[in-house]
Length: 330
Image 1: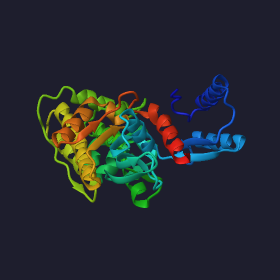
Image 2: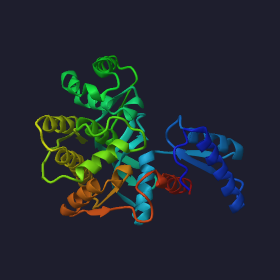
Image 3: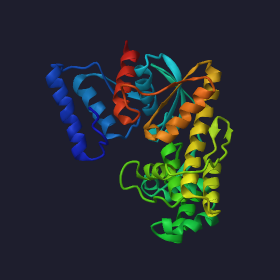
Image 4: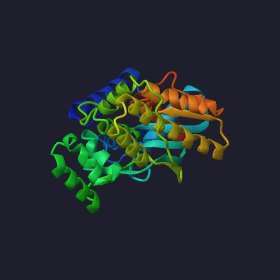
């Protein structure tokens, strides 16, 4: 079963109980290998090493988006494909936070072939809870962000400190997360400026976009296998300040990101001479983004792969980990 976020002690304890229950009902009490996430500091990773020591087993860390991709590939019995993996966060093989990735993937390995522009997260996880921090970092313009001072908990004082923090490089990890870009759009359109539950800002952006009545377009730029998200966010802010309808801008911003990711995926598919392009990660619970990606890929005569018996979110990650780990040890 999907246990969820194990950052809380009670949830981690429930995970341990679930493992013990699985051992009991399957009558299996020894293991050769334990699969876990690549992130070295997750509580689940530490638990994996504890279990490995207990059972004298190996530990096989699996990159988050590779696990997503293989769960998706397993649904359609595909050996290799290009995958758009778009979500909030996943520990990357370079030690940064990923979440807007184009991967070539087979069961054993993966290759990162493109991604969203890397952006700094001032305050680390604080930029996730208060996405106005993320918007400031992406726009890279202190004068422009001052127009949003009421979206910051401590107003202009906080804005000044954020830019000082960025300049000093203190607690400003890098991310390519699609979720952080969508959250920033929600702030830029004054829709939501604090995350009180998982995916709140992005979902409110999606709800706003649903009421769009105009086919407004925001262009996107790809360079060095990266989608320029700073340009997209600056255009979102510009249109909002010019008095365009919020819903129309929200829709256009989402579509720009969706089309940009799709184009990156097509370029990767051409390089690998593959025809199948899949989509996975929590961002693909967004119907408008999913439909845009699907149409863009199919209109360019590629096969679009979606989840069938598994989910796009983290509930399928453990399945992907298990499949990859089994293939690696066989």
